Image (tube, rainbow, N blue to C red; front, side):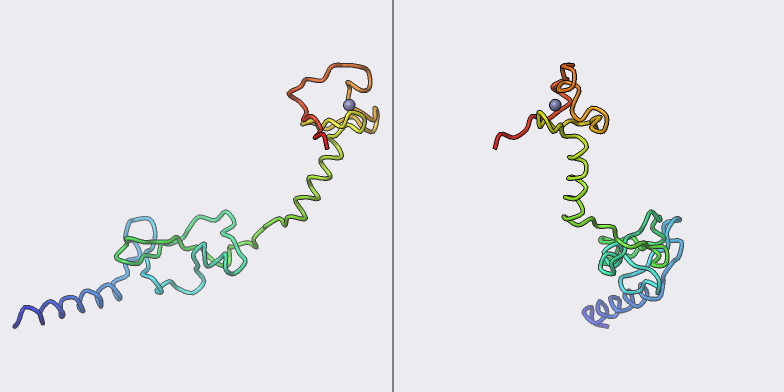
Length: 144
Ligand SMILES: [Zn+2]
């Protein structure tokens, strides 16, 4: 048999072998599937993301490989996935405004890293009774 024909036959045989030989305990830990062979109900992190989901703290349950294992991705169970929690810019801005109202002194306009006794004193301690404020505990207001 000519060498060239033999090589082609061996190559085809190896591909067929890879397609049918899915060892569920390949590395002793995770089932490993070839690309596009993953069973229904499993998805990679990227596929979950495309569905608006995230793994949600679950450990990957399997590994999917392509290019003879040189590239792989973890598989997660879709039924355990949770919806993505992506705060919008508006939500973050609202949270920051709410925090700023509790940490900014209305008299000196310094913004402290801690909440101020605004309900009782209405200002920071330095404005209230002259207690010097630690300069590391506040941001000086921007001079606009
Ligand atoms: Zn103040």
